[in-house]
Image 1 (tube, rainbow, N blue to C red):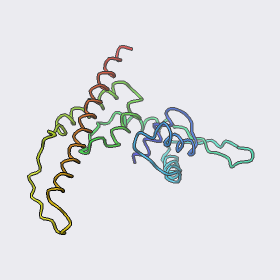
Image 2 (image 1 turned 60 degrees about the horizontal axis):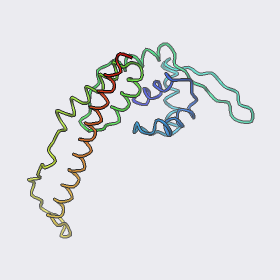
Image 3 (image 1 turned 120 degrees about the vertical axis):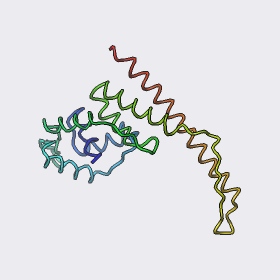
Image 4 (image 1 turned 45 degrees about the vertical axis):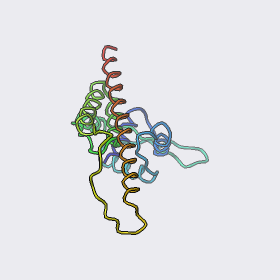
Length: 188
């Protein structure tokens, strides 16, 4: 279902063929963390046409197959707006692609929507992900294979935790900067 909103959000920016949507996802959209193959895009476009959210015109191409150029219908525009205005629920997993999808495709519609999404994500991360880097692992390992050294396993687990903590701390700092930037531009 998320792919529907990626497509609707992209079509809010302009009219595209399925191939153009895929090129966008591989180019400017690659950082949203939502990669799909061309057949998936065409299947979803077909479903969106059936649902009445998207329509297309055939663009004749000389020496190549004709292209279907897709655009939003009034119902598709409303579906995108309804999704954009629906409450955002942060994932328990930091840096989940759903946040980026919401920020990009809902946030592009309205500054206040973008601010609300970032604020919601930031509040959740501050509450749930602000875990000390010094968190110890009191778990005692009982290796089931002789090659596993429990002290070494604990060291690797600690390194992974520290990397996650550093990434999350960086993510929270980015959210704070982003919120400040969005809020400072309200007057414009």
